[in-house]
Every structure is written in C-alpha cells, then in structure tokens.
Image (cartoon, rainbow, N blue to C red):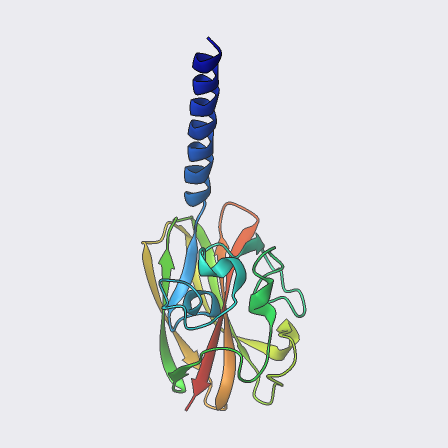
Length: 194
C-alpha cells in the first residue's frame, strides 16, 4: 500500500512538473533575428556569438515588460529579471551587424503571436557614448509600423530608414507593442553603420 501511494505521488509530481514546463514554453513571444539582436546572438538560434547573456541564452523571445519601460541603464533587459547581463554597455562588448544608411530590412521571429498595436524602432543619436549605459534620451524614433490590432505572421518583416548622419557603432532599439495587453517586447540590436 505504501509503495502504491508513493508511486502515485511521484507520478502526480512528475506530471505536474511536466505541465508546468510546457506552460512555461507556451509563454514565449518574439525576437529580432535580422539583423540579430543582442539576445538573439546570445542564443542557440543565433549561434551563441554573444556570451554571458543570462536568460537570453534559452529564451531570447521573453524580454517582455510594461509598455514604455524605458529604464535608464536597463533598456536591453527592460528591467526583466535574468536578462540584466544584456544591459552591460561598452564599445566592444557586443557582436555588431554591418548595415548601411537608408533602407534597412528587419525581421522579427515570433514564437507566439499577439494582436499588435505598433512596432517602434529607435536608434542612438550620432555622438552617443557607447561606453555609458543605454538611456532612451540618447535615442531618436526612426520608424513606426501601425498594425491596427492585426495578428502578425510568425515571421514579421519591416523596412525602416537609417538616418544618413549615422556612422560607426549604434544601437537600434526595437519595441513590439501588444494591442490588447499593457505589455511590449524589447530588443537591442547592435550595428556598425558603414
């Protein structure tokens, strides 16, 4: 009888644990895969080019916080626990994708789709200090796509315009604003503008 009860308790425990793991997996959302974000380049999907990225190594899609969460020094993590290694900012800390001024194609890879308000794109101002923590006051809004509550496809492509006065190392800050919740998803993209 004791062995039967123990087996039942262990089986229920394993089932509950398995359900909780799959529930966690279904809460994934989206990341910028091209040009790759800090989180993406730290993940298996991005080849783990960036090192020591915290939770982004396993879940680059989960940098989700309240809309307009522009915490000085915590833009890349949006203040989300476990993603704070993404906030380390130096001129040579992160892999950079080479881009040009003018039209830039970006791709979001979504692991869960949500009705969308807007996709906002910010870029560091010319003359910003790459050795200081990221602060939204050092960014300009350079693009916005209004999705008018549409449900996006699993792969979302946008074209924004990189200002002609940008040269060298910059950060593009991509924000996916969900329509029917108070949340958004945040991605920092390190680029070298030729």
